[in-house]
Length: 439
Ligand SMILES: Nc1nc2c(ncn2[C@@H]2O[C@H](COP(=O)(O)OP(=O)(O)OP(=O)(O)O)[C@@H](O)[C@H]2O)c(=O)[nH]1
Ligand SMILES: [Mg+2]
Image (cartoon, rainbow, N blue to C red; front, side):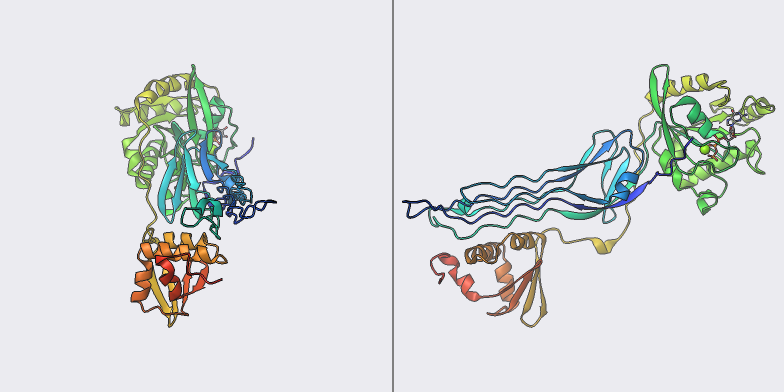
């Protein structure tokens, strides 16, 4: 019997999609062909990184212990119009019920087998000079760099999605029930807090399978952090049905009848979702004396509730309990659970457009996703490439804005991780971009 010590219900992952390969600048050189045209091929696209929900995985342990998730880069283009090979996409598997957050915001909820999330997009391949050939410029002397693959930090949070959840005081026999009815082999012992992390198993009752979750026992004031606290309750929050397991001998000094409301109050304190769920009362250990008396007293106190008397050890009553479970399960929809987002206003970023920051005299920074991407894809050693960049900046209003801020020749412009010297001449060449370049 092995405790599931590898259970991780959260992970921080660093994702890097593949960079696009650089385009190539090349001209055909063949014997007896004096004016070979441009033939630089495009770079290949960088690989994407995907997260995929997979049943059978119940922990984020694997991903938490290897948190750098990468896809490969695209290859660079070559001469003779050879395009670079595409980088390979990378697929990482997570348990069903994994919520993905970026900057505190929920970006996806991978609920069921096969749910797929494109976590980071590979960069576009840079275009080779052949791609820029036009009738005005038949011999372009520039090419693009590949676009950088997206890079991000994501927080993964697991809220297991089982059909039925077991809850109750420690030592009530929850793990014994899981063990008696599924192939799962959780640790069972005659002391409280034997189970430290959730366990899952599939019950196949009369050909009707359902997923059963066993979580650590909770005690009074769990919401104040007593015992193991109540954070594990989130793993039965999305179940359709709860089986509240009751030890006829009570727990510690709490009598079993009083104990019913103690546990159910803890559930409600944790989430209102529990008030909307059916909770079946299951008195366990029917093989022990006193159990039927406790069963009758609980029945009297809760006349409208569904109540069962079972023994996880002898198997007595289990089949009747599961008959009920498989009868009601199909009628209960999987509850939609509100997933709170972490509030942090400071992380809201400007996603579109741009703005200019005048850092100090003669030093300007262009901030914005699109202009930064354009600069990153420009090969600054190709003058024609720089001209093309400025041309695009002009079209989207950046040049006008820089001038409004008083930019002059020789000032430095920073954009992303690139810096270049401002030259009004570059701007002037726009009307006839390629004729004016002095070699
Ligand atoms: N006699 C009897 N003992 C049982 C029965 N079910 C469980 N037990 C015993 O009760 C003790 C606790 O069982 P567990 O299954 O570990 O209880 P648990 O609810 O998972 O406990 P925690 O993990 O600590 O929350 C063990 O000694 C079991 O053998 C039963 O039906 N009859
Ligand atoms: Mg247990």
